[in-house]
Length: 205
Length: 160
Image (tube, rainbow over all chains, first blue to last red; front, top):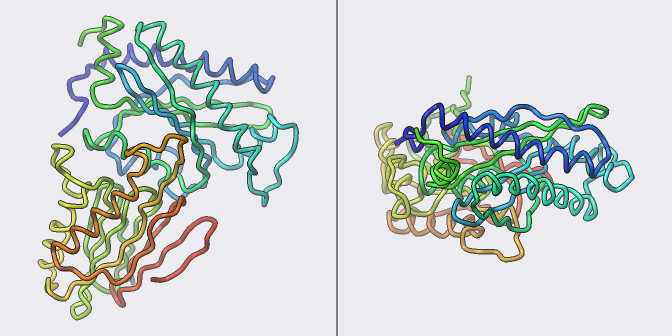
């Protein structure tokens, strides 16, 4: 049974719009942190069966750094950032002022730096979402895993899997131009949360 | 030529020799492989959650308790005999460790428990497992010999 058939195209547009502003705030925060220009794509909203979600990030076996936060409040959501491993190394290296070699694993400090980036970017995003909706969004401390994209997505999708067979993803790709760092950001609302957010901004179907 | 039959999240399928069943990137999910040693009919399910009682929707391949009976049904159609079936399972990792690990975060562990319970209930013998940990797995199940190949990123590969 499709979970999102009651959401109109117009409502999705409204959701995309507040997502764009939120992601813009996130990109600005990231840009200030690493002191480099960050570009972002207009968020794409996709409603996909679970089995197809890993394809969005290049297939289930792609090695990625995934940083995951659960968001509590009246409209609970999950946020996941995924960086291809090469991008994760450059980003962590930038933050720590060092270089990670191709065959080198991201160490404790690098992992910690990546987690902190997401903490700040997610905070900026949620602040913007909160000011639009007047709802509270309380993020958990992010957790990081470096592994197969499919395995990381499993763990995240299980959170929302209880409610339906499809995932609504809001996806933005952040790009740092000089060194070509890309990252995928996904917002996955739990069952009923999207409706609450839309109601709070006064957009009816 | 052996075909590789890919199975996505919350999905299942059956095969006969020489075909191979494959699922990529198991995290907290569990890959359940069943095999009939006589007819060599094999089946694989990629389940996401322990119990269909938590949710109410139609995809039976998503839950441990509903996927196993469905998988058996499919295998019987290809000539498998239920009393001969044996099982191998892999997955059920905890990919993220939060400071306050709540129930949902332990979903991998709960998935494994649920799978074992269903196998016991349906009287299918579990002959091999590679479960838990905090890393992802890709698995391939060979209907020809019932071997289960498990590949990880940092911990190598093995057959169980």
